[in-house]
Structures are given as structure tokens and as C-alpha cells.
Length: 233
Image 1 (cartoon, rainbow, N blue to C red):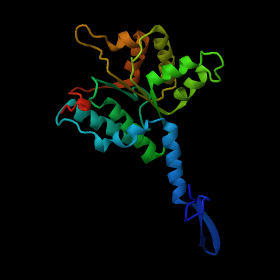
Image 2: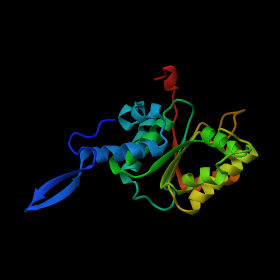
Image 3: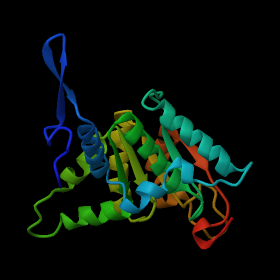
Image 4: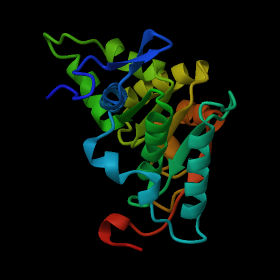
């Protein structure tokens, strides 16, 4: 990578004022800082340009349009949020924009306000934790979970993707830690509280303890409609 033409790679520019030299950050330093924030946020590359508010196309006068308005307001108000119910729980079938809106919030907070955020797919999280149980692993379960506990704004994608007792216990630990610290958290899930006949409820998937915590931590954002990935409109 070639050094910046303006600052020569130092990250600062000097200017003279009243006979004295002063240093100010170069534009390249701000760009580099933004890139580092994006990398550390863990947002999948596929989502970075696609999952923004301007690319979300809600059906007019539907819950999708209401969800977009709520998500935009959340991003605008963050971090000035109440201590209770300071998270959002996006529920709905596949392809209606749950992850799109949740990631769009992260990117607004990250790029416009320069505040740290973190994206975590729960399928990936469970695989990473299981890998620590293998002989010779140089990473512990605690080391994987601790950044998720500490980050100011977290998105947990695919809530309920694994319903084993182990997965429920792991999820409860993470939720309860953030609950106790009053840290805002975004969640997405394909499982509903009142599903149709023969379908599994969110509580069945994540456990009663976690669902109870979420009721106090989050406002529910219910989305519906056809699967846009299959060309639905």
C-alpha cells in the first residue's frame, strides 16, 4: 500500500499559525481508523454495502415500513438509550429483512458515530466454542465470549439456530451477562412466540430463562412478508 501523498504516511499534516507549527490529523488517518473499526466489527463482507438503510425496500404501509422507521430512530438515538429495553428483537420468517435492518443499525453507529459494535452469527459462535474443547486448542471458551459480553453494542444473528441444552446454556450466559450490565443488544430470529401448528416457538428453541430476559431487554420488531431472496415482493 502506497503512503498518503499528503502526509507521507505519518497520519498528520503540519500548518503554521501565528508563527508556530501545529499538527492536525490527515484525512487518511480517519479513513484508516474507520477501516479498522469495520474489520473489528466482524460484519460479513457481503453485508457491508448491501445491508444499509438506503438499500432496504419495505412494502409500503406494512410492518416492514414500521420496522425501518424504528431501526433508523434507534441508530439516531444510540447511545442515548434507556437502561431497560434498550435492545431490539427482530422476529419473522426468512428473507423479510431482519438481519438487513439489524446490520444497518450497526453500520450507522459504526460509520457515522465511530462507536464500536460487533456482529456475531450464533452458528459460527457455537462452532468456535466447540473447537476450544479439542486437544491442543490455544483459545478458551471464556476468551471467545468475553468480547461479546464487553462490546457496547452487539448483534446476535440467528437466535435459536441450535436448540440443544448446551447451546441454550451458552446463550443464557451471554444474554444474562449483557442483561446484568445493561448493554444494548440486537437479536434476529426466524422463530416466533406464537408459531403455527407443528412449528417450534422461540422459547422452545432458546429456553424459558433466555426468553424471559429478552422480554425485559428488548422491544420486539415483528416482520412479515414474502422471501425477497426468492424474488418475493
